[in-house]
Amino acid sequence: MKLNIHSIGEYQVITIEEELSVISDLEELHDLVRGYVERDRRKIAVSFPNASYIYSGAIAVLLKCIKAIGADEAEGGLCILEPNPDIKGVLTTLHLDALIRICDTEAELLDQGE
Amino acid sequence: MLSALLTRKGYEVCTAVDGLEALDLVTSLHPDLLISDIKMPRMDGFELFRRVEESCPDVKRILMTGYDIDGYIDMIRMHNVGNILAKSDTLDVREWAQYVDTILSEQVWGLEKVLPGVPVRSCTILTNSDAEESCSEVVREYRGEDRLHFEMALNELVSNAIFHGALQLTEASRDTWSGDFSLTADQGVRLSWAGDSDKIGVSVEDPSGKLRKTDVLRWLDHPIEEETPGRDEHGRGFMLVRRFIDRFIINIDRDKRTECIIVQRFDRSARTRHKPLLIHEV
Image 1: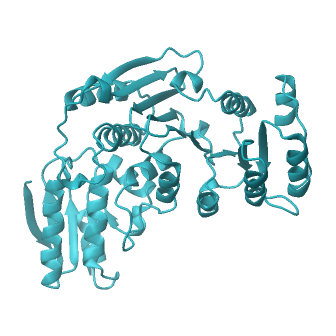
Image 2: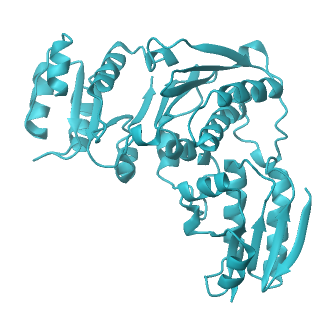
Image 3: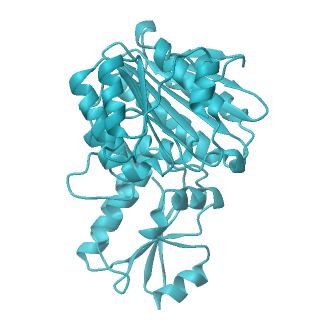
């Protein structure tokens, strides 16, 4: 799985460059998040700009990432950055926006990170 | 209203004013079918069903409620109830009457029971390329704005039918499954679909009958957003389908076959606010 990592403010932004189609690939994301948590970095944003589709296995991995981070809002948490509008609709229909912050822009992520 | 419609259809209908009176009627008349509200004076629908299960287990039962069924899911699970109709603002009594016919005749199988008169097309999925091609063909016919929701629901049902039903890999880890498969003709997953200008329906049938009503109710009782310790790793797909799709019907002939039917109206405003919960297990 092709992952790019960069920082925006205090956030580590993990960008997944491909479709979210194979769970075993997404486990790489989970491992990466756990690695950050072990180093006590709990402000993590995940971006999948090229994904037009998501499925229950990918959602399960996102939930595992939230669990791994385990932070309250003041300490950080998982954020989905710039999701495709259809995927954002899926996440909100499933009420996952109560657990995962969804930011439509990097500026919004910065505002919330401060 | 339902009573009048069923009488017009030729059924002999008796009504009761509360749960206790209903229990007396069932015990004395031994009807083919009991339709009951959940909230009633003196005895609620769940207790009525429990008592009827003890005294007249062969009486078929349908619950109905004007409230959100998902708010009762723990009680539904506790009483293992499978047929619950929703009285909503878009109540279609003809659909209810059709459902009563289906339950009484036990002719629950096939998309044509849900979408009578609409031509049904079918194919058998034997390989992953069959699955991709046939699902793409069905999704292309979807005319609603929320195509992704429909596509996700369809793919969840098809992949579940293959993984759990045809391949019977439930004990294996889904995380490491490559998604490649090749089924024999006996293992094939049957995909059927039918649509008109208002809606589309899909049936996904696998020849295992491994799914159980108790499992479905347990999954529906654990919201997808809850990642509690020890949570069952299965069932998120069913929850997702329940949330995304207007009608989700599950037919189970234990150890013989399982059929999941979804029907989605393209116009969101035409969908029911409270969805029925329809699981037939024989």
